[in-house]
Structures are given as C-alpha cells and as structure tokens.
Length: 259
Image (cartoon, rainbow, N blue to C red; front, side, top):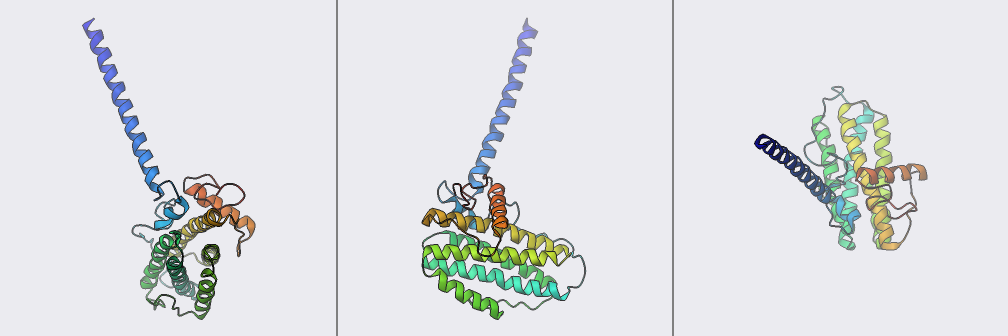
C-alpha cells in the first residue's frame, strides 16, 4: 500500500511538471506574439513597421551575414544595380522622413527607419566590391537625375493631403519591388540574391502597411499604380500571412475585406 502511494505521488509530480512546462511554453509563445508586431493593439499597420516589417525573420535587423560572393567581379548590370538601389532606398527614406514632418501618421517615421537599414545594406555590398558610393548625406539630394526628379515629384504630391502621402508611400514600394525583381532576374551573385531578396520582403510589408493605413484613415481602397492587380493582391496577401495575419488582417493591405 505504501509503495502504491509513493507511485501515485511520483506520477502526480511528473504530470505536474509536464503541465507547468506546457503552460510556460504557451506563455512564452504568447509573449513573443504579443510583442512581435511592435504595436500595442491599435494602429498595428503603422507601428509594426518600426524595423521594416518584423514578420519576415531576419529580413532587416541584425548583421547581414553575407554569403560568399558567386564571383570576384561584377558585371555592368550588377554594378549599375547596386549604385541605383543605394539611392532608390535613400529616396524612400528621404520621402518618408520628409512626409513624417508634414503629417501626424507615425507610419512615415517608422518606415523611414527601415529604409535607412535598406540603404545601409546596399552600402555593405558597395564597399565589398570597392565601388564609389553615389549617396549624398543631404536629405532630398541624389546623384541620379531620374531619382532626383522622382523625389521632387513625390514630395509635391505627398504634401497635398495625408491620403496623397500614403499613396506616395505605396507607389514607392511598388517601384522598389519591381526594380528589385528586375535586378534579381539578372544576377546569380549570392550576395545580391540574399540582400535584394530581403529588401523585397521588407517592401512587401511596407506596401501592405501603407495601403491598410490609407483605408483606415480615408476609407479609400488602394489601386496599384505600377504593379498588376494580380501581383499586388499576391503581395499584400503574402505580407499579411508572413506577419501572422490572414490575408486582409491588420498587417495586410485592403483589397475588398477588412484592412
């Protein structure tokens, strides 16, 4: 009888430990999910973008841990791509930083921080391949004349209203995605593929955040300006699902359901 009591006690203790461990794991997981978006329940589509969309693991934070280069030299297309994307990512940063001073929506300040990480990532490759950096440290100043003209146009439009500013943000991310896809199709360099793919994932999240914020503030359903409707829907669904939301969740762009 005594042995039986001891056996029951031991069994109860083991079960108790298992339950305690399961509860702790559940609480830990809940805590991770609660903080993973960087928001606090409201305005998640704006707040979660502080590091550029944390739903994509490692896409923009921490060391780049670059892969070995596929070759020791760059061809003309790869060189041009690096120099152009360095300034295109700066353009996004500068536009958002400028618009954040004009409008109260926190999304511009948050995503501008992410875009600084983007342009810094491209700078790592520029340094690695001993290229001359075209970047200017002055806000709104660009070496590439096409990007200079685009910046001026976007700022003029974004200053008209908050809705226009959010449309500008979404347009920049569409352009960014298309350019990154083009450059990725032209290279087999492992450095490029790692960095540019991560930048594209961040742009997916940013596009989704801008379009959801547009709907929340203005009630306007975003219509893609450069991407095809099919490509746009696929992107905002991908961004929403990666961030832990179903397609049209708080992290997803508005496309007929709830933003």
